[in-house]
Length: 319
Image (cartoon, rainbow, N blue to C red; front, side, top):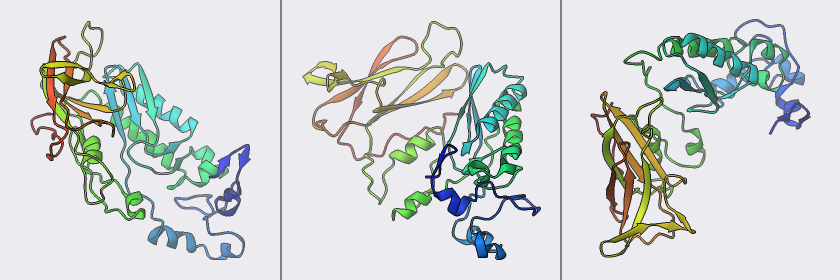
């Protein structure tokens, strides 16, 4: 909506005041409020009043790092500038000495949204990113410090999950849908999306199946790291073959099978797969998952497309 530096729209000129800065002190430093333009600059209370009542910014956003062997994913809850991202990545690599990380990938717009996050130098210029950094010039250094603290504990046997965090489901409210708290556990995001409620968004009670397996080995190993799942259909009694959708086998190579895994102790793992069947599927026919385990063994699990039961929950024993 705002446009890039080489082709900005009219929006920044109306509310962002790109390049304008003031001399005031405090958390927001040089920033001029969005409503403080022209004659309204004499009323600096308008912007604070708006953000305290209607356009309230989030009071908390989640930060997390997921290590997969020597590789890590850092979840950034917003739109971070290039330099801000580089500083976070460098800090994580330096802080995670115990885990000997080889690389870190930054995932933006993950788990929350705190708008833009600019460096203090970029903030002082008050261009688009700086003018929309919500919490002032110290916000980016705070994120850098926080991700460094998380990285220091990546090698802990029992990592700190932090405090409880509830997403702000503002978008649901705008569309007249009820707010709902996210589920928690190893499948919190997927189960939250798949569980139907009174809003009737069309989320089906998905056919699913679970199984136990050996623990995956991260690193050089002849064994696969994740199981392989495909869907089979019973063409005749006792005769099964791969289900084809538009000529392609229905498997986890596509987007309709979601698999969740969790370690269960040092040598075991537990897995659940959900199938999001296309509308063209005949629910009366018989279907099953064909699963290639990490051990190389093959198992099958029957799928019930007509069940009214809720999706398989994540077992409490799974850690």
